[in-house]
Amino acid sequence: MRIVLTAAALAGVSLLALGVGGRLAADRGRTGASPHPSSANTSGSPGGGSGGHAQTQPLAGKIVGIDPGHNGRNYADPAYIDHLVWNGREEETCDTTGTETDGGYTEASFNFEVARSLAADLRAEGARVVMTRGSNSGVGPCVNRRSQILDGAHANVAIDIHADGGPPQGRGFAVLEPVADGPNDRVIAASRRFGADVIRRYAAVTGMPRSNYDGSGGISFRDNLAGLNLTTVPKVLIECGNMRNAIDASRLVRAAFQRKAARGLAEAITEYLR
Image (cartoon, rainbow, N blue to C red; front, side, top):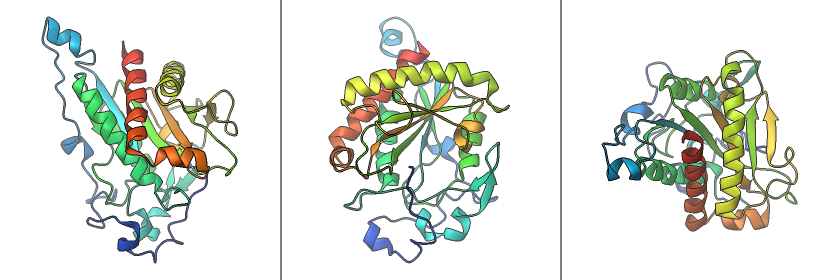
């Protein structure tokens, strides 16, 4: 996520070239045209029943929020994506296009595929899942609106899914954790506990090393991101690997790795909520 392609720079890229489709405003976060991720993306029984069924659904009654960073057509509306929003400390752009591999595989696509697999894993464990976007063919919503969606759902825990655009020689994943700023004060300690679970399980399941360029020991504290500044539920952001590194990128583009990434995150969420 660190190195992004500006929306303005990509405004002229054709839809065919990026291989995405859908309506321009499908996931737009504007007033009167906001997406409704909680309507189409909250399936999963909140009740676990009793006996053996309850034992196979450890997340029955829990709500989990998932924010797949960026969106597949953010490049198509630079004026909207580049407008400023309040992130709890300062202004930042509504969103960005995200990064991509040297081969052109976009971060937005990666984020969404991992999120879909993660949602399926969590629903199988009985959780109700709330996602901030329901496709990879829309624009937005803005980063502050994403926080509002997950906060409003009263998620028991939430995760923002990203992949980084770091230095080409840099490898590995990092978990970004919030710094107390007022709105998130009550969930700082819980977010750090959750972050430790994410680091442990993601590394074990995927074999991805901890970042050698971002933060320390796989943890990076951030105070400039709306998703972390505005959260009122325990939350971290994971950079699942570095798309600008050839070794990491060769793994991130594979569906099998994306499923492993989702499984590692699901195990972390289950461990935390237990």
